[in-house]
Figure 1: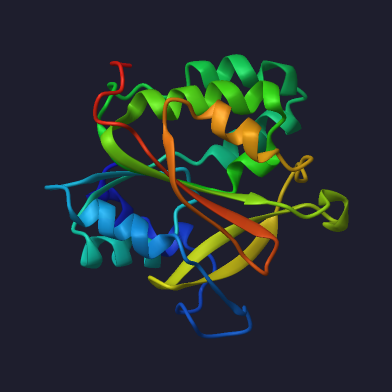
Figure 2: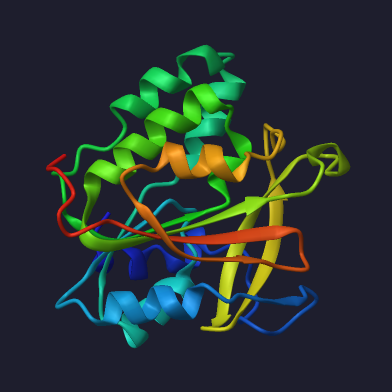
Length: 221
């Protein structure tokens, strides 16, 4: 989806309604987002791949702060569809061919917490696809929960609404699948090879923010 298309869909897709920073949803700190923005800003006319869902105020934020083009690929919707159709076994193969973009084209990728909802068998092909699409010196930001997933009943996804470069609102919405067992740090590193972890932060919200960078000399995808 092109950047220009998102503004016309803002009212339809950004169902949270309230302006960022207002209303009942609490504001949470983020330490990695500012560094992700700095990396994007250093690149001419950057292309950002957002794994969704569409949040209109986030589109505006990135447009004003970085002036980037944005493509949204709502992976949470893909997970829901496979759950509802009882086709979870097909998810790894689906993710293996999910991204049709050319290799080395995205300057930044926002994964949010999508990997929390995936078993290892589905997470690995998704990660490989993202590594292929990410450009050399590009950055990928992902959140990983460290909490017991059984504490979240009923299951929900989260819209991560950017308030500013240092804070987010977490707005839950219904999910067909709950979070899986947290991934170990070493498994996360292996899954995203040859990307290198440039920064990671463990927050009081039981969330690990991990910022990856693709080496400039990484082999072609």
